[in-house]
Length: 270
Ligand code: DGL
View 1 (cartoon, rainbow, N blue to C red):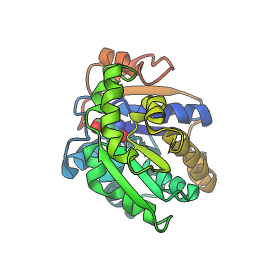
View 2: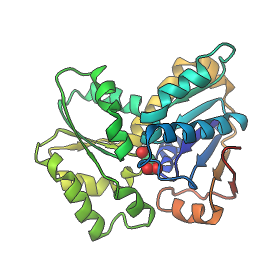
View 3: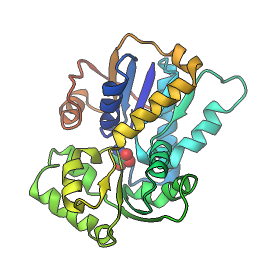
């Protein structure tokens, strides 16, 4: 089974893209809603929370865990790969994130004037600059943290005038530089795809991050047939959250068009 981990709801934009491209696999989605948002926490806290989420998903039978969260991918992926995967005796599990697939795609697109929006913890980590440098030379990356966008989207205000005004304010210093590419480096932001494109204008390509991550997972599974064989393919979907299950179902409707069915409330650390 593929475990999909997020602090709360943003991971649903990634899971949606997985279900479009790779519907055959079994998925278990875990949103750590009791402790979200992660984006305003420091690295040590994000690492601790993410570790507990990943260990829980492994304990439920996941062979592959995707950190469907830029904040967790930026602040915890490398460390957790070292701690949980690259040690003697572990060869049947892996953890992947969203930053590397996006950085690779930026390298393929070869656009040099880049803008990025994300949470404070993602922008503060500097991870995108480092990862893009592995695939592209001579680029300029301008980044802005947008802490108000996550709560507005979760409240169902994504398409309101108020959110558009706030988005415009956040994007102003980036738009001023006429970027060729905007990287929405938070899994909540695809809900604002149209709005981001409208504000940035035609000259700027706004990356469709869910599709990029799903394509990258497909490629990974082709390159790792042993892992691919281990994944169950009954098309089952399970959903778990660390806070109220009914509230989880309600807010998920802003992110995910599929019905969730039963949501199990769990406790972390388990
Ligand atoms: N969806 C998370 C991300 O991609 C942000 C939400 C949060 O701050 O917990 O960064």
